[in-house]
Amino acid sequence: TARVRIHHLQQAKERGEKWAMLTAYDTNSAAVFEEAGIPVLLVGDSAGNVVLGYSSTVPVTLDDILLLTKAVTRSTKRVLVVGDMPFGTYEAGPTQALENAMRLMKEGGAQAVKLEGGIRVAPQIKLLTENGIPVMAHIGFTPQSEHALGGFRVQGRGAGADQLMADAQAVQDAGAFAVVLEMVPAELAAQVTKELSIPTIGIGAGADCDAQVLVWPDMAGFTGGKVPRFVKKYADLRAELLRAAREYAEDVRTGTFPGPEHSFE
Ligand code: KIV
Ligand code: NA
Image 1 (cartoon, rainbow, N blue to C red):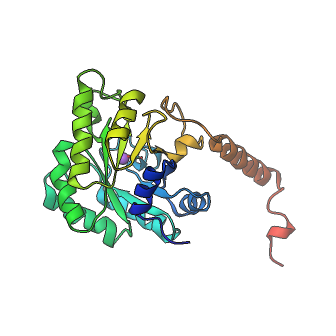
Image 2 (image 1 turned 60 degrees about the vertical axis):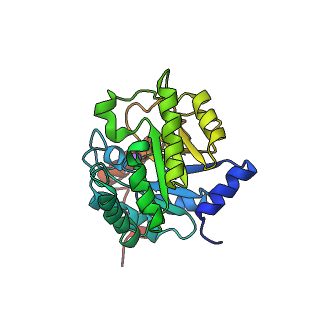
């Protein structure tokens, strides 16, 4: 089957068909998600937390995302791969954003990029889309601004609702093909979804968004420790891998592995 394109996501909104996005950071998991029929994979800077061991997305570099994007694009041919622009790779201005987005497309093989922010990054979104780069926006709680926002907090409450709506409208007007709404009250996210013509992708934003996204090690139970309230755990990969590693160690200790079937004459 052919590659998922941004117009397919637009058509899905018009038909009222919801779809699921996942993050991906390596070649095997990306292939699994494509086989599962996930249409869009995000090489998220959440890799900073769930792959690289940082306590935030702030230290993640363009080279980090490039490496992971290459791994994801090598094993997939149908999914739309979105490369996440790390903190410090687009804020200085549209030209900086264009140069770095080009690298995610040319070297990484991504078909789109994502960046955080609303009205503030509208000039960046405009220049990228004018130059043939599909842009996914990301508003509400934006993890790269964690320190300015005072931690992981729901955005758009009270007077923040008007600001969120204005940001949503601004990224659409600038040319974004979709917008992630993170940690936004469900009712406000529903309202944004209704007002916008482009798809909204919710994470902690209720059931009425056009699509949903989750960080895969969170949804698959691979992340150690606590996961956010908005995550549903669909598997317990950590427990399964722990069991396998323990069993292997035990087999080696006891001489059960390797057996003759694993050995050469
Ligand atoms: O980096 C990431 O995983 C993200 C999603 C949570 C939207 O930005
Ligand atoms: Na991100």
